[in-house]
Amino acid sequence: MPGSTIAIALEGAELRVNLGEHAWEKHPEHPTRLRVHLVLTFDYRTYHEQPGGYVNYDPLRAFLKRLEGQPHIAKLETLSKQILSAAFTMTPATRVRLHLSKPDIFPEMDGVGLIVDVAREDFA
Image (cartoon, rainbow, N blue to C red):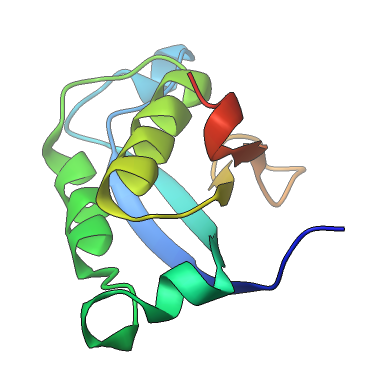
């Protein structure tokens, strides 16, 4: 049975990024709207042993905002690896759940996206 955990959720971030493989997504003057939901899970004890007794998520939030100025990325999978890498580099998270969604791609859908749930030891 796993030990006790605590999680931080960064929910509902909405970014404008140069992202996608469709022809209409490849125009930098019209970046793609992207919704980001991140849940970072920590070992309960490790979390509270951090300076100040908590994990500072501000650097990760700033990283997400900087994605808005990045060059075009074709695939959500590529972007997800960048975000996961930042989450594991900037925090002592043991697991990260990331949900990326592009809400404006198809009119008959609320969004198209990718959900990744990965443990630190499995991330490559």
